[in-house]
Image (cartoon, rainbow, N blue to C red; front, side, top):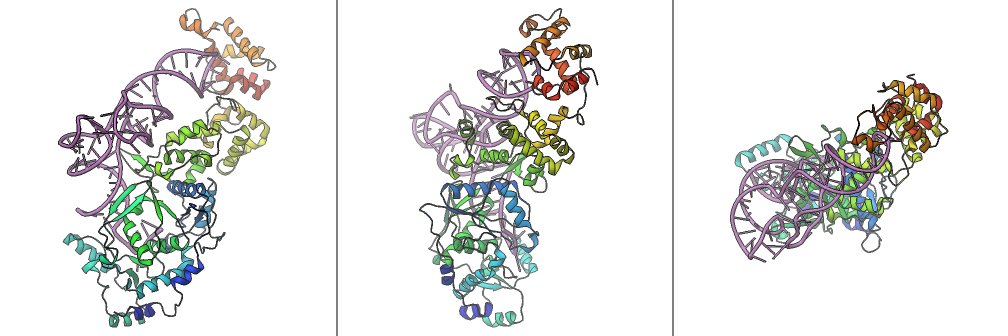
Length: 537
RNA sequence: GGCCCGUUGGUCAAGCGGUUAAGACUCCGCCCUUUCACGGCGGCAACAGGGGUUCGAGUCCCCUACGGGUCACCA
């Protein structure tokens, strides 16, 4: 076979060489040990919570080493591309503090950062591989391939385009030439060389900080390198791009482990130095007795947009994801409650090899803690922003008197033991309802007479202690024991305890069994509204 | 079916040949307390099963079971 001739037939007039590209994209000038990592999503516009999880890993590996974190859009599949999808991804990740040093509109000298725009680059390597007899055109149709697959199943052979099944592998130039001249569609396949030429390896080894040492048989499949539209498959693009963009650490989902032997072979054949790999296990979901991968179709919490709609603060989602990434994160956070997350000593080695089950209950807890550490002003700002998007009616109430709103959010905040009432902004409306007459839902108090009597003597000028005393005194006169210990020891003769008396007041004023500190609630509400509600109005 | 990976309480998990097998979430109880919370203390609850190796195994090896991934002109 005259491979040079074939390469000219395939890519006439293409004169650029791999060496030219080496010169155009020289090694980065970075300090020793600086890692270059990337996020490489498809521009579907949909961000999976797992994408964010992987993004954090890559971002931390780059940042912690003083390296580069960049975004490459893998738009090689037309069917999946969505208008504006790439921008949505950048914006969505930005909300969670993910920033890219390089991306489509911030070229760091290694672009373009969209794979479709790199077609000419891939063709240089494609032509070079054909010249070296490492790639060939394949004219098999979809039907041919499914027939092959069916035959392999009956013969119990390994699936895939390899060995005797690779029909187009040995087509002579005389057959190829007319086909190509008539413009018959073809894909370019890898021509797997004799194993002996690939360092005689009987097995290849992947060493991964998260997964340990994995040994696998070498690739023997003639995988597709370029699709019929001339755009590469993931595998070929991965090798070319991550080499040319000088990626040092490939952070990706562990579903790629199975194709690692192919990637290993591609890097070797192309003469590229292989990067390090960090394969991240998927986030799982409890499903009946077992667990499965979080699914875009079945699980709403799979989408990053869901967290925004629920009103989970971005910080909380990030904190939770970090607890899944490195299990000592929680201990670190307890010891360093106010440190920025970048101070946490993240390590890929500490990641679990198996997929972690995503637990919304735990997220709520983490989120409550995160919210409890925020100032009232910060809570107000985020809540208002959330409501503007997702609950306009509530937004109108919150912004009617911002100072008032901040007061309602200040109760029990800022001390050593802050309250933990809210996990997500979507819960805030119910939590704050009694502060707004439009939302207030009255509940009948257990002792309306007591409430009315208390309305007579309520004095907002009283400081908290004296206010307590006045509740106790009136309660005692009406049969409520003022001393909890005494009441617990012997309740005979009492209508209830001062706790019951308070509960009655709380019900009248807030319409609920539980609320923040009643004295402060009353202070904020003002005498008129308090006495009105105590009187059943 | 082939090839890989995984399996410690309901969940997240520490553990790196000798531990009373940490800690966190959930749930329950008690304490604190004017209430609601917060907080404190305590409780329930685990090494998938079977064989080895070893004085000794959650930790090393093998087998089985179960779970996951992959085997596209998708990434």
